[in-house]
Length: 140
Image (cartoon, rainbow, N blue to C red):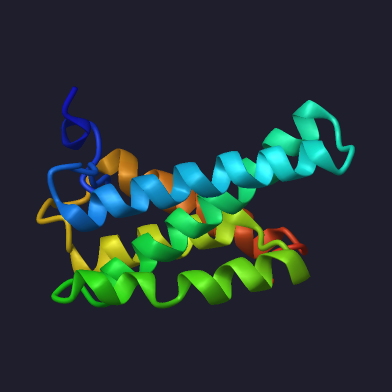
């Protein structure tokens, strides 16, 4: 299924590119590793899966943001991942602001090569309103 039929901001990950394959391997390894570690220290299965999934998503979003900021050099997207991992254990970031920032970058820069569709625009507007009114996020 071609995701670009539904969204001008979506960007599929093609495993044919070595850097895309690398992030898939890194995210999978982090998810499995942290989940197994959490289970080994006595956390429940659901909590362990949530922690592992949270860090995996944060690492992926960090990589995706870096790719949007420096699209000409794909290896530069990996530079921030160790710091992201360290900071995750200090204070796990909220995912919604990171997703919003990524989508705003794609909306403004049109790096996907597609024009944002009406659904993208309305979703991004709704997300911005939610972040502006919610006191737990950085836009408040």
